[in-house]
Length: 224
Image 1 (cartoon, rainbow, N blue to C red):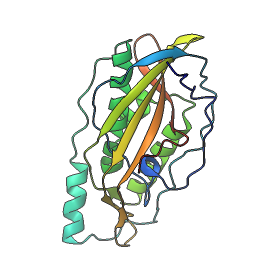
Image 2: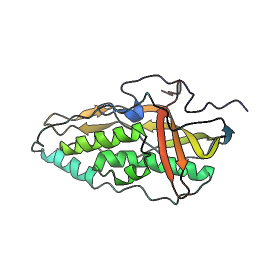
Image 3: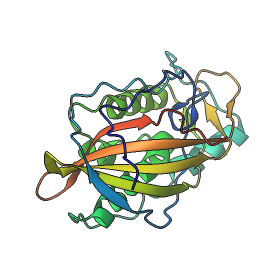
Image 4: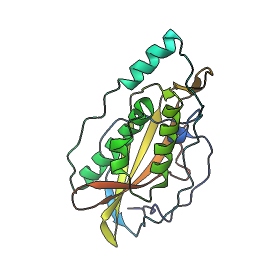
């Protein structure tokens, strides 16, 4: 079996507007397929500082009056149901289920502005998580939202930290379909194009639940 790189040691490239991290270039879509297999590899640490962070959202001082079409679109987004809850389990399948659930929360957060479940799963040092929470909050505070979309994720592999078996990395292909973002500032909606990327989700088992430490793009992992 070939060596699987660790998330903390893997080189990354900066990309300002890409797949799962775009807003006006910000989106992700997620669906769960089969586990691709895994193996135990070297150390990964939560002190990693990812180069991939979501773009800033548009803000406005006051929410304008919406057209009937936009008001209907906003009502539909706000009515989006949260992802089905999962039962935390300390197994490879449990790690993949947790990562998939977290990715399913992403469109829900941007459609509804409800950050509670996403925030509860986020490690205190997760820079990506903080960016999503801040961006979604600013967007909704300005009266904006993103059209809800169906998630689609394909797990490809997983591996663990030899120095700390409570830490997992899940590697997945993520496809995001096109949709619209409404800035909430009276401007027309911003169209978000379809993207495909390979994502790495690092998560840690606390003894009763999973916490997301890092979400980042794999170097050379784009599958457009």
